[in-house]
Image 1 (cartoon, rainbow, N blue to C red):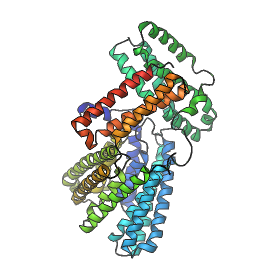
Image 2: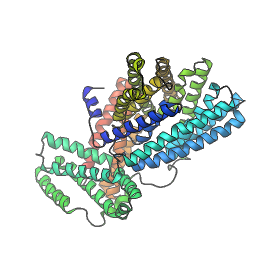
Image 3: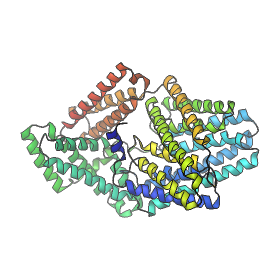
Length: 546
C-alpha cells in the first residue's frame, strides 16, 4: 500500500469523525458496564458495537436509520440462531457425529440464505451462530454450563447492539435526510465548478473524474437514502416524488457536465449554457417518473435466480467444506486456541476467489496491526494498570483508530474492524489485567490456516473468478451502450444500467488482482487490457446525448 493510497484511505470525510465518536463512547460504556457487572466475553461485546455501527462501509451512505433496521434484524436472526442451537442440542449433544452433521447442515443453510436472501446478513448471522455454538460443545464439561454459556451469548451480543443503535439515533446522528442533501449538494457543486473550470486544465480533468465517479455510483444510493428518510420522517415520505425528480435531474446534469471535455469548443460552449440554465431552473415536471427504472430497485425476498443458479449452492458447499476442515484440524491437534480459523472461513467467504482473498488479506493485515498494538500494551502498559478508568484510556485510542479506518472506503474498511477486535481479544481476557500473549499467537495461526485453506478450495473447487465477472460486466455494459445508441431502450434506464455494469466491472477488476491467474504476466496484461476497455467504454457512454 503506497503512502498516497494510505493518505487517501485515512483522509477526513464528512461524518467520519462523528461516527468514530459514537463508536468510542458506546464502547467505553460497554467496557465499564461489562467490567463492573462481570459480563463475560467483553471483547465480543465491544466488537459488536463497531460491527453494528459499520453495517454499511463508508460514511457517505452510513446512516442511523439503516443501522437501526439492520441491527434489529440481526438481533432477530441471533435469537432464532440461538434457539435453533438449543433445539439441536437436545438431539446432538451426546452424539458427536450427529452434531457434526447438524453443524454442517445448519451452516450450509445459513450461508446459502446469505447469498440468495435480499437481507443476506440475517442468513449469515444464523449460519455463524449455528457454527460457533455447535463447535463449542467440546469446551464445556456438561449440558448445564453449555446452555448457560449460550444464554450469556445472547446478552453479550444484544445489549451492546441495542446501545449502538440507541446512540446512533441520539448522539450526533447520521440521519438519512441530511446525508441525502449533502450528496446532492456535492453533485451540484461539482457540476457548477466543471462549468467554470478552464477547458483542458488540471482542475477540469479532476472534476471530470469526480463526475464520472458520481455516474458510477448512480442514483440507487440516493434513492435508498430518500426511502430511509421517509421511514423516519413522514414529511419526507410525502415529498418522495418531488425529491426523486430532483435526484434524477441532478444525475442528468452530472452526466452532461462529465462529457464537456469530449466536445468540440463550439458545442461545448453551447452545452455549458444549457447545463447552467438547467442548474438554475431545476427539474422538469415528471422527471421523477423514471426513477423506478434505476437498477437495483427490484422487489421480493430473494434474488431473481435464487433457485435456478447452481453457483449459490456450490458456494455454500465450498464454505462449509473449508469450515469443517478447520474444525477437524484444530480438534485433531487438540489446539482449541486456533478456533478462529473456523470463524474466519465464515467471515471472509465472498462470491469470487478474488473477493475472498482480498478480504482474507485485509483480515491478516488488521490482525497483525491490532495484535502488535496489543503486544506492546501487554508488555509496557497493562502491568501498570490499577483502575478501570486507566484501562478505558488504554482501549479508547485503539478503538478510535479501528473505528476511523472502519468508517472509510470499502476497499480497506474491514482492516479497522480487525484492528479493534484483535486488540480486544488479546488485552481483555478477563476482569483484570492480563499479560498472556498466547491469544495473539493463536489468532494469527488460526487466520493463516483459514486463509490458506480458503485459497485452495476457492481456487480449485467450482472456481468463481472475479476476472470472469469483470469481462461479463464489461460485455453487459457494451450491450446496454449498443441499445442506447440504437435507440431501442429507455435512454435514462439504459444509461443508468450501463454505468452500474461499468462500476461492477471496475470492482471486479480490483478484486481480480488477488487471483492466481492474474498474478502471471499474461493474466496481468489481460487485466490491464480490460481496464483500458472499461475506460474507453466510459468515454463512449459519456458521448451519448443526455
